[in-house]
Length: 455
Image (cartoon, rainbow, N blue to C red; front, side, top):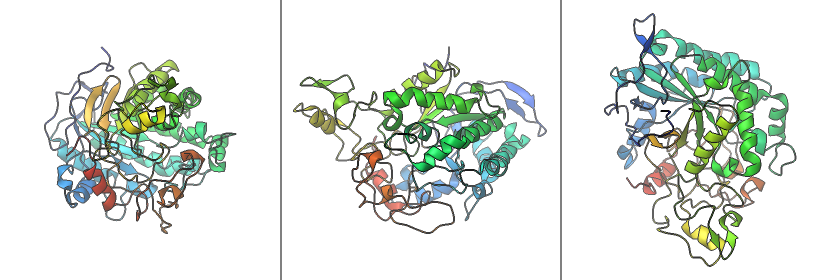
């Protein structure tokens, strides 16, 4: 039986007991004398998950933070310097060594975010990176190659670690939605589509990292409020296929996709479906849904996973859903459907996602922690994860000079009244936010307060 149908389980932090025995068998012997385990169908199954001490300490220092400080979160490699560690933050080897200690000899997942493409995040400024649009060779030789070299060391490659790599969030979907004649197009995204360096970079990363026996690549696939429309859905699957077969890679080097990384889309909207109608008007015609075929992340992730199979990916690929900030609990959470006065009243009254517009992505007011990390919670889903560490800013509310290549994006400014990508609506962002990736105490407290399930 494939992994597509499983019983739900709970993903435990690295300090907890394992959820089951290792299903793989020894397949190779490394220089360290430790046998490398065979690659498994779902890396989270029967495994602990690494708790990042850097993030855990920051969370524990916050009022109430000890309630979640033992949860596993992603380790972000978002610039070349992060590989060796920056500003007191641990580097990749230090994290891997710590993960080996936490493992106690049991299978343990380490979650890495690989995020430094040339011309990164071409439709936004807050997470622009250090590499220019043409610096693909630097990306390969100074970023991906050093990461692959470390992961290939026998101490790590021939160990009980399972390395989950989230490959380049907010990249490939931009080539579909923010290029050409689209009203959301940007010159930067047109450049990246024309020079092919997103596709080349992702393909190179998949090929180099996927060649390592205990590495599991998950490619970012946006979220339902970005890719769920008919004219985005299949074209994005095609772009992912193009990247997965570029630079020597093959689709077999892709373990799955990850959705909702660093976003806020609700896991499930239980109070309405796209098939509902109010006074003869379908939910798809509401201002919130706006003809999207999906209203939440779970339905989107399951459908998009199947679309990738349809275009040529292996039938057993999985999906991860980032639930770190999509709980939408607290006093504003609806307890049932909205009134059937009209379709907009019905949808707006019942939706859990309380954003002003589904295109809002920066430090959203009212957001809460979502489902705790879990293994195999639903058909087709390998795990719910907290790849985006709660409490780390999406971007600064005003311009802050920095040496990380990160710009000021007005979508992070609470006074901003929007652009075509969010329907020219207010940004919904929290005030006084620091540069992206830096600790934002006010956001962390907001997430705790509005957590669903509640803490």
